[in-house]
Length: 465
Length: 135
Image (tube, rainbow over all chains, first blue to last red; front, side, top):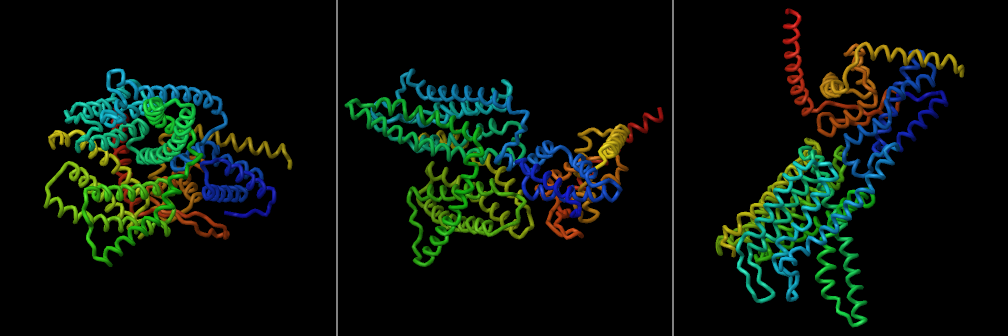
């Protein structure tokens, strides 16, 4: 790497550099590295007798077209693709056309999702007959929307009809298990929902989300980066959905207030149409927004994890210290098990989303140590809780809720323990961060598999209690 | 700048490149497939940096394996991401900074695997070509 006395060459190199930097897939250090190469090459060529600007031209030509190079870099660093899509100027027209077509497809799917919610009404299952929503709607909530979401991704990724049909299988199975079991219905409203039915309501979406993931990822399922993209997508969708829901809440509030002002009760419109149809349509709209506007709030999930990782670490450590200090044991109530499950889910989420936005090549820093501390303290807290719960189960026997929660707890415990181990060896620089990322994305299907087991096996196993 | 002489020399250079390419045109796939074992093997000889690796590849292949220079870097970054090589910024002899690459333990394992695979391909081709030349 050489600095050149010739001003003209320095100028040309500076120009080349600023041009290279405009390519979004190339980051500052990449450009540095390429510039070094260019300088070496120019140095060697001038040494071989070429004049300065000749050498520069040849060196640039040998470097290759920046468009092609940018594409290769984007492929090597797919997490950057997420931030900035590489667009070549020539493809702009074609893209405008596809975008317009996409808007129509999305609109059609939103309408379909909104109407899907109303279809059961045609067959006599009314949405809120006596001011409460029958459990049928809760059991099938994910089935109104997820298949349409899968259709959207199948369309977007250009799946052929045969493969799309295969994709329909998990949804068909989901519909079967959600509706075939004879749960007892208590006629007095509001109906009391049996435990196993509640478990189905909670677990079916988790199981089916994997099928949406397969549609989203397409051919890249077996590459870790594809699944990581799906994790990012899920997080951003959750954020968009919350934002849309907030807006929807304000809209609903205005609808009610304004119509009440003229003494018209809009209850049937709000409860029967606005909220259920809006909630279904918002999933599709949110997904489309995430797909289309990836770069707008690209960094929301990582920012939130940065914000809350220290806070949760502090909470867990304080909790442990207080428990040791006061010596008061965990009071195992019915909800405690679920609370600790949620705690572990949250910690996994924090780890997953900070991993999804992390540059895998960066060396470990303080934040990584903090994450390890978070994981370890969550493991300790959960260990204490598990011991208490085990004692209680041996005393009072198994119920579907406890078995489901315990299963989830164990799955999360395995995930976090290995995550902690990988994090520790990453901090000691024995392993690359990619190993941790790999473990997380490989483990994803396990959660859905367990959810599927709960949906398919628990109701008959526990006699539809 | 004597524009005429400059363009004459440039055209000569391009013509030379064209001739070199025609002499032996490697398919893109083959070049891409051989990139990983080549880079790993070169780094197994000792730590190195981009420009030196390119030079070594040209030297080893007698100039037949000509990559567009830039394409080496995405390959290096991918290997780094997979943990096969490690990189750090260091100082070049001229005092400017330069990124040096080093093969890791994982990388050596990967190199051994690649080596076995390429030997299988090599043996198979050799077998059939021997037969063809004897017939």
